[in-house]
Image (cartoon, rainbow, N blue to C red; front, top):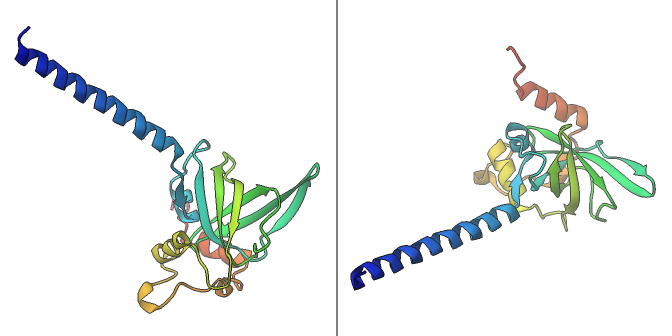
Length: 178
């Protein structure tokens, strides 16, 4: 084997090792990435039961109810972005700042029955805060245009009841066969 051939094999082996290392790193990252999704995005593209996502939006006023499973409190509520609503089930104690009509981000997975099983719920920390992902989802849904000022305050969503949210969603959702 000539010196030139050995160098060529060394370069090929180095590129191959670099490619394998890059593939392993990207595979490790892809399993740990948690994407933010709005309710309308989850309804349009189900992330699957094994994919952890962050669900963000406003808690629909009047949708919160509590149950208990043994000694564990279970909170069930709906999160909306104005276009769609997703039912969230969270076993545990909600944050002190959690309120209906306020913005919230929940970390969890979608279940086969269409509910979102949250492992963690994050609530806003004051009356002016809104997670940037929620503001972006509102902008994309047409509920807010940045040319006309700040995102809508959480208080403006207090008037939206569950029935009004469902009526708005039903009006925008195409029916099968129509």
